[in-house]
Length: 345
Image (cartoon, rainbow, N blue to C red; front, side, top):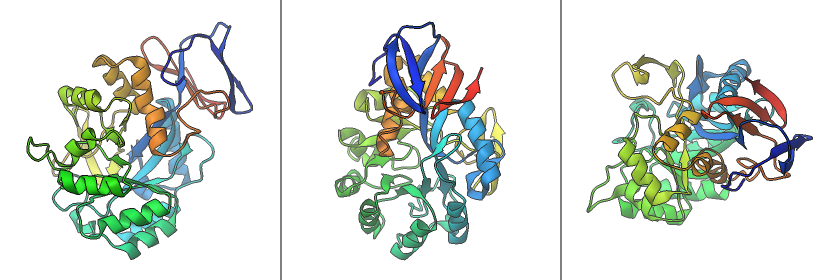
């Protein structure tokens, strides 16, 4: 609770946390359900081309790893494909909660596309953004703030209550700070697909770490960031670091992926997301010396705060009973969403 391990059992009633610190014989450690802000797909599901049945299958996989709320993430694609995918995003009900769609693109830097298709990238376009927002529930948009017209899109998104994140960006520190001052709240997969940090030009990554009012999102899967980089991020920004899985299935945006040594790539060899679950990143943080309570916050309360969902990521009495129980090896043994058991080991 609130970053502290509290002894005693947790009582659940009517889908909510009724009480904590109760005497009882429960085993394991109860933590809030994990909140993943970047999930492109899992298994055979690619959220770029998913129907209700596919969302249900993905939900089962995510719940098994402790995720009780997530943002299906749609990478850069033609407008008709994005609008179709947005229309398919289900309501926040049944199984892991769907916070809303994370549009990662198409307003990205042509120099920092990563696995995004260059053919579908677009310069900032207010009319296009308006059409995408009208197509479905958009909760977060990642864009490159240095592009001409990007700050006007930041204004529009902030006015609509959509979380704005900087990512896939070649922004300088000055350009990044201008966007942060405008209302950008977070940074998408820090250090990946952005201008490298330099001692005279710290870029968007350095600007983000230097500000205390900004949350940063990182992929801690052993591939996207070196352990030393993860430690650096934690030393600079503990308490405002959110882990994301950047999970992918067999396809990403309709493109088939190849998994080599546990790492997914496009057929041209470009790194394309991760197949490691979010709970694995939490364990990796602990292995790097981060206390369990703080590591739990990085996959629960901090991402919930970024998503502006105070009802998620907490076990405070009165909050939703989204609960994950871990054993002594930090393996998931039980998962509840709204008090309903989805997983029982």
